[in-house]
Image (cartoon, rainbow, N blue to C red):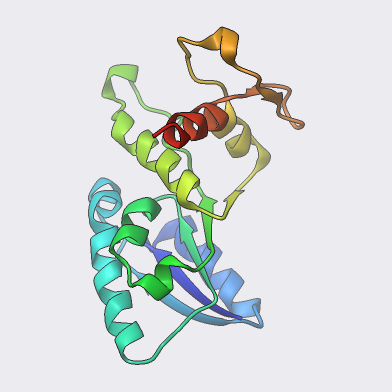
Length: 176
């Protein structure tokens, strides 16, 4: 299997995870990465940078079977900018962190655009993986809803919380 791995913040635990996995993997990896500098800028621009790099590699004859990326990539944006052959690939989104619940000193400091990017990336992915059950549960925790009476959420098997946020987002986007 040929894997296209995209890591916008290639440092620390992100680097250790990918280096460790690729070192023992039997698959063929193409790893595109950016230095671990200013993660917010990486999250905002890496899709454009990676789409350009992938377009060049594809024009040189490279192809892949699957995309693997971390939550720092805006996957939906990347897929919109990537060549058609890459857009058709299944994408695995790995949540190393979760920007909706990532600790901040003061709640007023939270930039919800990063949480929305995580959610739209999850919607664009064929599969979503989490670094640990805790990340999965906080990502799937219910969001406030005006039409709560309409909701039919499922329970998360690992923590018992209601799993309505992604269902609600999918329903919202499917209405358009």
